Image 1 (cartoon, rainbow, N blue to C red):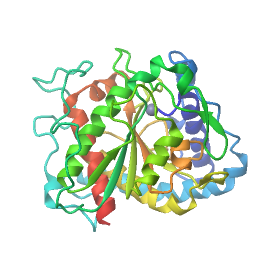
Image 2: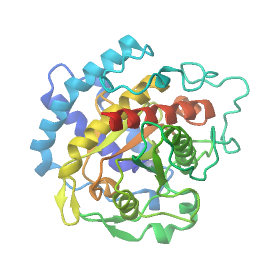
Image 3: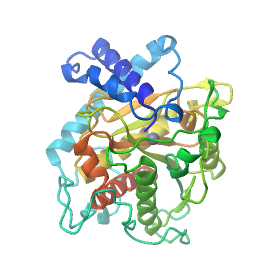
Image 4: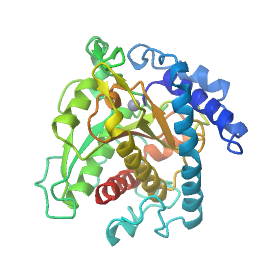
Length: 366
Ligand SMILES: [Zn+2]
């Protein structure tokens, strides 16, 4: 999750822009339900909240254009995805579709709708091993991604809950100061976002290293808290990463469902200058969204992004300070019981990892 309150505000902002600017796209269900606002503030006070976004008015013009330009293409893509399903016709990925191995199901034992299968205990999933190899970095292989560096940023840290003073320290994100990090959210049964993100990240590492990529983490459960958002960005920058993906799950109100990918907006302020990475990050994000949708079968968010599965933000330090292509993905809403059933399923997490990884591979092949 990237902060409840800001996320809800984002939904309204984007929705308003869509309603204002995109004829035929506006739909009643794009409006964020009032209930979401209430639920949004209930459980994770303190470190999980970040300051409200800065006023959006100065950005209204360019952002409106950006969102308006984004929507038609994304909707076309969504229609294509819906039409072709798993037949391999990922509109975003061609003509640089990855090798044929990507066409096979990510988890042969899992159903297409992500429901639990016999033997998959679901629940918290805490005892389940990430699917595949150990967490230690394997040497870069000789696959098609040899020489490519991918940084995976597992959002939050399970230890953040015990280090509130540390994660509340202010860091400079270019546009302003912001908390070092947040605790992240959790399902109603207590499966934390931090555990989810680390599990998915480790599964992704297995997939990407098999393709030959060099994979680095911002944290691997090997530190007691953090890193702060500025350090998370710096790790990707220092690695000169070809792609960075930050893994999250959201904490919105029940009934809000689906995934969305967050793209950096154009920010040039203080230490932040995203202008060189806006276009490449969008390309990365569209490919990740397309592959995630195709492999998991999950629908784009019904509460952010107007059905595109894409959002643009200028208030996230992890994006603002990045000098390499980077996106965030909110894989689902931990506070919705149906989404939570997927997020707590190891089989579904394998699909999520496969989908995100395929998007990265597609981007790097492009
Ligand atoms: Zn998060």
